[in-house]
Image (cartoon, rainbow, N blue to C red):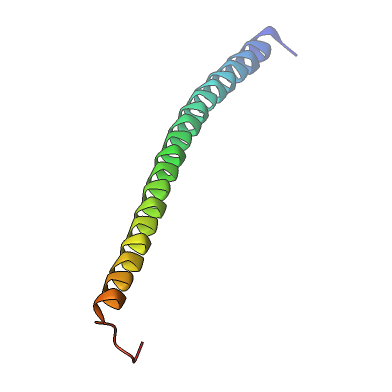
Length: 76
């Protein structure tokens, strides 16, 4: 292989290596962003489950109050 061809090949390989380096950095950045989104969604799901629990507790309390006051409907 001539020196000129070797230089061209070396330049091509350097460009490929630079492109791969950019892809690696972008991949790392996207991984961190995805992890952040997953943490956020996990927090929202925790909040939703807590709200559902609170609503269920309130429903039970209202049912108990209605029962004590004799306001319950027999069709339930």
